[in-house]
Image (cartoon, rainbow over all chains, first blue to last red):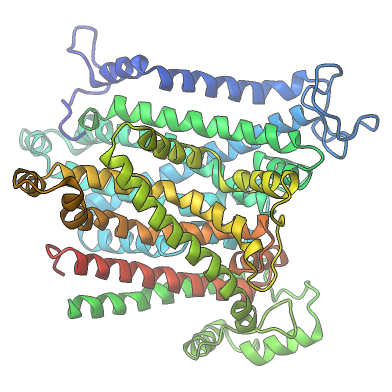
Length: 296
Length: 306
């Protein structure tokens, strides 16, 4: 990645091909990645819009149809759970929460990790040593344990779950960015730019940020599914999102308890979660191939 | 080597002190914390806590007391169970988790190395494809989905195995959890083994051995296997950490009385001292495991000198 030609982010129409345009074309050629991206957009849109369009509320009980099997004969297409709540609406609401936790926690952990890693890498020396020592210490504790610990102390509110997940998922990013920053700092073209008198701010804008951006984008797509998975595990264990609010993890946990009589309650949320994770994996692979020419 | 070992051992001390200190402060000074007086704590528990932690002392002195007890291997009194110390709870739960986790890790190492080697030797064969597929499945269907599905198939439909529970190390109750943990880990090891064996088989000394006329079986067993196993050793550390995490899920799914369930119950009941003790214990295990893996690496690879 460091050997990529260093065009500024926005070049004029007459400029040579930018690495970003190359990346876009490489990505578009990757069938699996584009399909995954489209599917993810679709899932997100349906989760956002769906609950408003469907006739049932996610927390209202239909007394006439408890634990109804899925079918198109009535208005509960995906069936209902044991309390007569419509599963389709609950899956979409759960998707809203799961995706929101995924995106919020990823954004905050990527931001924290990038700033932490870049600062450590550029400052170097004593500050670098201590900042990375903090990362090492956090690495020594299994991540789920930190999350459970924070949830125990702080409570199980939505934002606290996001905070707890953020607290342990930023270290990978910090390490990657620090490594990249360390090597970028010593690159010949950065030295050259400095030698001909380019200002520090401009070096950062034209050389450092574009080179870090690919890494950040790739890593973001890898972090989102990991974070969604963690939220689901927490919720599955009863330590995450709390009733009556729901998430895919909560739904899977409820489904696991009733699967003998109502297997669809496990099947549908599990399928939605797995599809989303699968798409994010493909998307991450595609972005890595597109943005990291060295790694093809 | 000795100097390196000692240096690493010394580095463990500040790590542990920081972890314990931060966790201690978090738990004992948080709003809604254990000592805010609103929680209904029974008199007996309160007496235990009072005797153990000297709540009248300032926090830093309590912390030092806790550390002092820890040096004697005493994890303190439980916050919820009047008659149980954290040590008792851990002593009951640890053998369960160790048996299941240890068996699963050993099994997945053996299976993973065998499958990975076969995949590397017969690239693009059905075994290669299925190892890769297994890895994909594992990353998409998380343990808390596979677990209930296993229960659905093997205990509810086929009625071969109990759906969960524990009966004094009876094998029937351990099969499904071990199978689940092995399934999660075997793909990781298989993939690492495949990659490293393919790489080793392309190296010069293998070509020399081939040119010498050695049979493929002899080349693999005598020359390629040992260097190819190195990367596998390096994933054992992370693997064990992820198994500890996975234990939280498997022990909940199959209702096993192990460490994982202790963590979940401790968190659900807000048993602060139990959680603190478990974090300390698990951190200690993980840190020493990482050290052992690093040292083992140096022993196995003569090129690495510390």
